[in-house]
Length: 415
Image 1 (cartoon, rainbow, N blue to C red):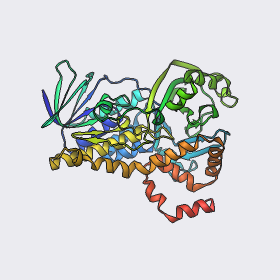
Image 2 (tube, one colour):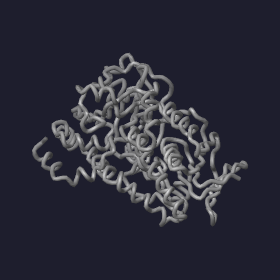
Image 3 (cartoon, rainbow, N blue to C red):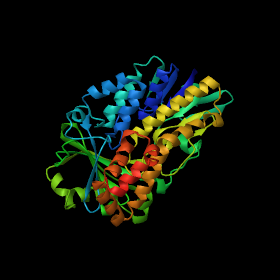
Image 4 (tube, rainbow, N blue to C red):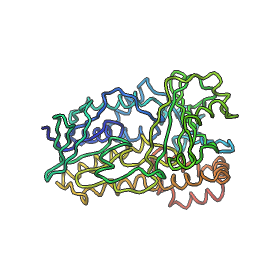
């Protein structure tokens, strides 16, 4: 049996970030993942400004190595396309200016395949003196004992830890069976992802695109540019809506590519590469308790995906860092009780609460195409609204923005 202070289940962005932060603080930890890296992960493949911001806070050298990596495409923002096809462009940083050469040289966001990005993070873990990584091991048993958690793969691999950080994704058995958080169709998106080659009409600054097509509301169709002329193309829709309307998402994706009057021209010479893969997005549209005795939930296992934008990686990494900071406090205090770990819930609320609530409101507004069209029309002319949306990708505290009188004056004056 292996003993450790902290055992992290899952080596994706959330778990890897938690391990990087613990390493920075000199805390020994074990990371276990069922996969052997590199491995594919179905995702939109977008890395917003939150990713680089988080890595810089932990270790600027890791952020610098990501900047220099050749597997990614630099991206400077996101385009929201309303049902009436009005376009709202939002930079990944509030002050983004395409004409500013400095902004062009220092992108804040990227697009890259999760196979490459997750492998990059795992390789970073192998540099860490305080991190021990175990790949290809699927933890199936969790036993809470008086002095810690015992986890096992049922085949002889056993770890005893004072604290668990659960970061094993949207289908986490721990989240369901022990934390008691169940998938609810009203707070869960069914998504499909495909890779296409030679999609035309990409944004010159490699903005990712979210198309809120009437047939998909309150979901959307996306196009994310990738290196080497590829694009991540997909659809996402609330599971509740998929069931109620009996939507075949695969047929809908292919129909859009072939028949949509605006988009079909961009796909006239495009080729589908590989299959169309499905995945689930557990949304942060409902507040949940993410802590319990000797455990913390992070990332998709904590249902923290943005309900409007689908932002998952940045929120996973942010929550992983906060979980690690809470773990350090727990170790110092010798208190791993649910009450002792509850500070993590408060930190998540402080950092993500306002943002997730705002996104939930916008997501509900998407159900009403005329109102959503109006919102996009107004936002396209209003710098304050654009700044607010940009903050959601750049990790600026939204509460500070919302409490400033100047923000509301700007809204009224349409500036």
